[in-house]
Length: 116
Image 1 (cartoon, one colour):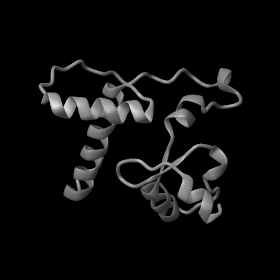
Image 2: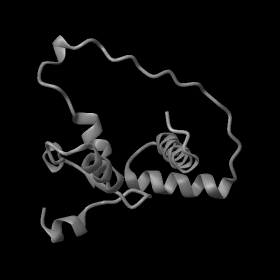
Image 3: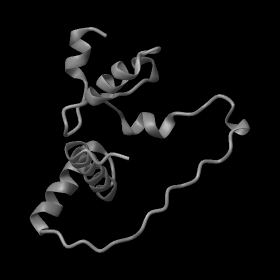
Image 4: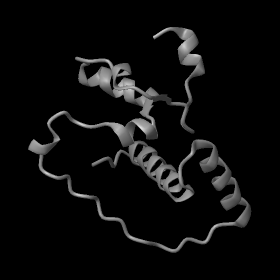
């Protein structure tokens, strides 16, 4: 991928480059190369929503991970900022908040060496 195209790519809050096409993912990587790649890249929301497998009818339906509704008190200013960021990313703010929490928990698990 040329440098000009990389510079035009969108990045997430962790500085990872969003991947918009499955062809951007290198094939036949070692486990270490895969780890390094995904530390610097993330699949775009659009790609996550459009990715499919050719023979989907042969696969069992995936189990939907259960979610639990919670109440969260958050400062009005912070909520407003979150909603503006979500609007720019064209995702619902609740989804963006879940992504932020999941990424931060993952980083803490790595730091504390408590990954499952």
